[in-house]
Image 1 (cartoon, rainbow, N blue to C red):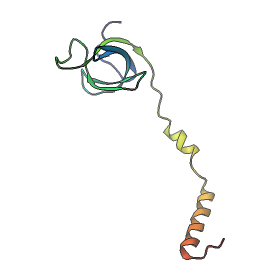
Image 2 (spheres, rainbow, N blue to C red):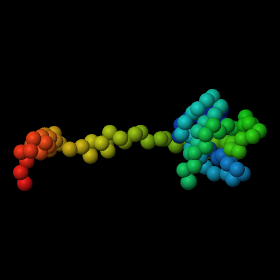
Image 3 (spheres, rainbow, N blue to C red):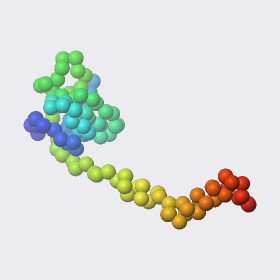
Image 4 (cartoon, rainbow, N blue to C red):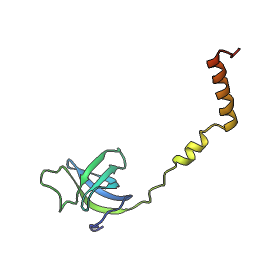
Length: 108
């Protein structure tokens, strides 16, 4: 596919790192012409990557071609924390036990 001017989070590209190419996914847009990429297979993160035509002469990585877009899943933090919380009744009972223990009134 031809070069795409503006990449978005979730776009997949073919990038070269030290002469070897691999499939990377855009994880952050750092500047107008620079992106942060993550390797799909190994998880290697490449900071400040540019297109081959725009790259710096000293750079060891660059983007060669645009492959497509994959929708990024939304955060599932809320679902996970909801499952791992304890009920209010259990918390109240535990706090009562702790107070009794601190006061020295706790018996086995």
